[in-house]
Each structure stands twice: as C-alpha cells, then as structure tokens.
Image (cartoon, rainbow, N blue to C red):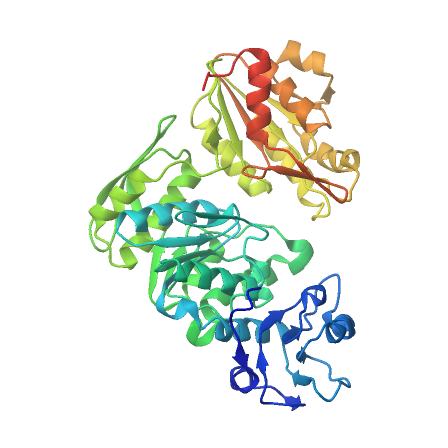
Length: 511
C-alpha cells in the first residue's frame, strides 16, 4: 500500500462505530494492512478471517512489525502504546476504513458494478467502449486486468481485497478517470470487499452453478449476488440493469429500484425485435423505452447478443441517446479470450474461450453451432480444487455439441490431472460410446473423444486434425496466460500455443 496517506485514529472510530476501543486515540495511521508480513511501523492491521487462515493468529507478528492499531473481532491483550478496535466484522471495517483512508475516491466518480456468473468481462469491455465513445474516461477493474488509458496492471482477483480496490480507484481517479467499471464477484460481495464503494448503477447478467464449493448452494450464491443491489445501504446503486431471461434475474428484478430490465424476452424493457447471428457477427433491431436502434457488432453468438443488450440498457439508463449507444457498441472490438479468433490459413475457424462452467461451455458451443461449421472439435478440461460435480456435466455438454472432443488438463492445481479427467469421462460416455486413440480420432474424425492430458500436446493434435470448414473451440482458459500445476504458476497461453502449432503445421498467417 502507498504510505503517502495518513488518517487520524479518531476518524476511524467515527467510520467503524466499534464495539470497544482500548489504548491511545490521538495518533495517525500511515498504512492499512491485512497481511501481517507487510505491516510497517504506524500501520493498522485488520485481522481478517479467511477460508484457509484466521488473521487473529497473526496479530503478534503484526505487533512485532510495528502495528500501531489492531482491528479485531475477538478482544485480546495488547501493548499499552497500541490501539485495539473491536468490531463485529473486520472485512467490512477494512472496506470502510479504506474508503476513508483514500479520501473516498468513488464518491464523485460514475461507478458501475457488474455481477453474474457469465458475461461480466464482456459487458465491462462493451461499457468501456460505449462510455469512451460518449466522451467519458472509464477505468476498469476486472478479471482480465485493471486498466485506465495507458495504465495496465495485472489482475490478481476479479475483485481485489477492499484496501487494494480502493487504492486502485484512488490511483485511477488521480490520473483522470471519471468513471469506474467494476466486475463484482460473489466472493467480493460475501466478503464485503465493495462495502466502501459508492455505486451508481448495478448490472446482473445471469446465475448458473459456480463457486458452490464456497457458497454451499445456488440460493446462497444468489443471495451473495443480491448484496450488490440490496445489501450496500446508501452505497448501493440507484439504477439496476437486470437480465430477466434468467429466472434468478426475474427474482432479483422484483427487489430493485430504478429498474431497466433487459434480455431476449419481449417482456424486457430493452430487447431485440429481430436479430441475425452469423459468422461475421451480430445484427439486431433493439427496442427500448427511449427509442429503437439498429445494432451491429463483430461479437458472435446469442449469449453475446445478451451481453450487448445489457450494455445497451446501461448506456440508455445513464442517459445516452439510442444512436450514441449503437455507435459505441459497433466500435467495441473482440474481448480477450471470449470467442477470440486465432487467424490461420487452413480455412478453419479457431476460437479461444474462457468457458469453464457447463453453462458457459453450452452457450459457447450454441454460438458456434449457429455458425454452421463443417465439423466442431472442442478441446477442454476442468480446473482442480473446484467443485467436482460440474465435471461430468461439462463432459456431456462438450460431447452433445461436438463432433470430436479432445479432453485435456486445465488448471489442475493440487489435484491429479488424470483423476480430474476420470470425473469428466461419465458425461462424455453418455453421448460417445468410448474413448478413441489419437489414431482412431484422426481416421474417424466424428463421434468420439480422445484424452491427451498434456495441454500443449492436445493443442498440437487438434490443430493437425483441422480441415477447411472445421471449427476448433479451445475452452477453459481464455485470456489466462498461465497454467496452475501443483503450487507452480507456469506460463501457458492457449492463443500462443495455437499460433505455434499452426506455424509448425504451416497454417499460420504471416504477421
């Protein structure tokens, strides 16, 4: 954290309304930390309870490193020169303290929060293009990266921890950003990371099974998403954009003020009267309460029509004219790792997509089926240390919509890649009769699956099979440029690997 800022402890008391305070109340804090290893003299240390570790265990380390203030949920003895602040929720306390420490940078920015299982990243890129075209200066904090004009920072989480999030907001605000577009994960909402953000507009895309290892069940996951709209009190958005094609979206719409419903359904405030989806992209006539307009986009597939309509509804709700919304969305280019094409001279279409849930894979495959390719080859795997129940479902989805499935490793993390593939297999075999050898797959070409555990080898194999008119979907990692194997984070980018394999085959466009 930057230490150029400081804050009186008395200011912190007012912000946090603590249950109890011990120790001095007239000193200044020069840094906020939740990792005891980063504490420097003069810091406030927040003892966050995490899934793996409880910050209360590290209070002694923070004290040894010179912490001036300890914020905790369980009172304990502290040295007389150290201030102890007892609160009900350390995570919320950190969010509110961070907002105060960084002079509440989001209070005078236009802040848009996007939540939902799928579509957050695409909608964030579309809104960035739309609002830039309308003369605003948007910063984006999300899954692919954190960015503002020339500044591009690597993304560690979809939504960073509250103090890191507020530091980014302050940095972008100081650099001239007047708008903040924020992808808001369910973890961030549950863990109160955004409680210090002042939202103007909230967007809900959809809800499908994901992160159930964390949330327990779909309803708890939904309730976490709802916090963006109804759990942030005065900091919550005054405008809500809800996709009502989704049953959870319909439930949420009944709870929202300032609602603009959107979707493919004719019941939505913003919806397509007609649409044409092709290999070239999307054309649609959009109906809205403030006027109709023609939409053209290079994005592909029905789910991207839903994303475009979400972004259009947001632009209209913010007061942009329909013609301006149409102009901005037409200018928006492909989103990294979201049905991102890889150029080749084989006469095939190669797409890289982040789809790593059954629903996202189903939607990506539905989009490519609509393009009417000669043959669909789907290369995919499942991540390790994540709910295993989705693995056979992903296998069944891939097999149902593909002529050939190439099953490989994704991010196995601490799990054995082979055992992850075994979990996928029952879903594949609901559709395909059995596993083929690579040679059988090359000879038959349709109606089976092949297992190649090494992702690089799997990509090489799939590229060698490609013929004119074929479509290869490489799913699961999208924009990611790494693979998580054991405790290692190794460089691996599907797009780079595809270009390398194409070059070796002689099917790569010269750049």
